[in-house]
Image (tube, rainbow, N blue to C red):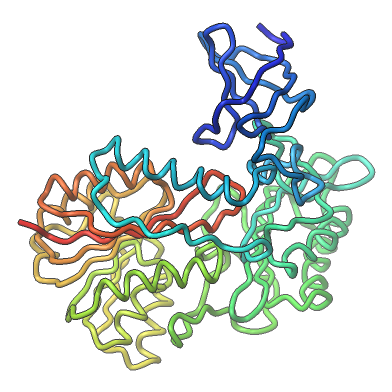
Length: 425
């Protein structure tokens, strides 16, 4: 069934940020709607008794609806919840979290208030570029589509990153052929803006030169390019060494290196881990990346073993530790998904922090659960896989005692978590 029109009232917001209503015994998900909205929608059936609604008209606004702050909202897929009043938005995220905890038998912990990053604070973004006949578009994909929505503004990212959209468009019109695509990873580092262009398109001398010119004209720290199906990146120009500084310790960053989405979000997560490690003499930092946890932990005199699959990040972290004289910070390149650190090695430590990718760390969580390490901090960018891994720890004798929700991806359904587990035997 496609194109059927209906007048419905939105009852709640689903886990992906869409308004949810019932019609004829079926469930309808409608983007950009809020509870209490009475709307007209065009329905498309997505499964038995399930429909996606395209918003046609808001007949009557619900009490939590507000005017979105971005003119691209509704077309651009980068945000899902700009139309929701701030209080309702925060309450929705916390309700979703509490519901997940309750359903997984993990609702006995102290849950801190939502730590929310402010608009204009996101320090990394990946803009999609498509070269069209006559021009180029730079922005984010439309929701449920590969169509790139061209942006003029973006209230989510740092102003310095938003200011790069127009110059990237000019570069694409110069360097790319009609039909070419590219992804541009832009990150604000402690050295300035770092730009990585991923594309399978052939960049001739003019295209490469235009990227180098962009570095000088926009005061970028570095420009690099990479092929989407190949490892590594080629640095085209570097105005100054690109670094992050963690607790006063500088560490070099490879092009496209991972960083938390906002500076204050990173501070909330690392502060939680450092506080939980109070009194610990030895620690493991698993899925350590460039050392956002390892360096503050080692800088306070602890013996730290930091492991990650990213060999460049591990090499840079090791070099940073040597420069800083942190002799008790040891690094290991290791695929923790395939080769988790075993329980008997973890057992000698006082503290473990692990911050896996979105898929979570099922195998590593099982080893931690069997280790009996007194205090464990789990950091997660996916509440669903966090619940699975947390359940493994609790079933292994740990107690979830404290949880800090961190909202780094404003106006999206995403939520970061930092959680403390104490071994109860």
